[in-house]
Length: 238
Ligand SMILES: [Zn+2]
Image (cartoon, rainbow, N blue to C red; front, side, top):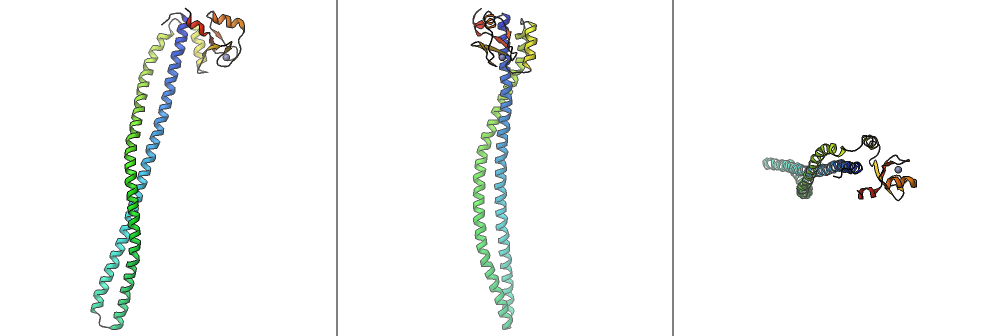
């Protein structure tokens, strides 16, 4: 590292900007993880919904089948009784009840077919959803893991940075550091180069004499936004 205070100062600023970038990246990744986690929950809910729909369809089938069984049993009972009857009038009444039971069974058969069809559709939907969910779950979980690894490596990097920063601060005049620290609390780019003859942050135009001083290596404050200004040429000479 060049030991000229100005160079060290600019190096410190670059360094701080890098750290700032790491913090931004950290926040960004945390948001991305939250987003992927929401996706995962959404798909879980969708799959749970499909499962419930299939269970409901199965229940509907079971219910109709139970009803069919009961009708069947009633019919059998009535037939048995009918065989024991000798009274014509009574027999006819029984026969008519049996006919009604058969009609009811016939009607139920339609409903059962419909319920079976619905169950088939719901089961297929559930299977398809399970397949999609399983695939996507692996993908999303891998994505989350990757992002968490990136977060961990940023954390390690940031831990190293806090030690390195002390190194960077050496040989920089305390006055600069104080001003810089104060400015840093207000803006993310407290030190900026001059571009043309203006401050590259607020575009305030500088006096010619100030530009001259900057080219000779001075560090000035912008009279408008109070950021530190430097001239890029200084970094190339010396
Ligand atoms: Zn300015």
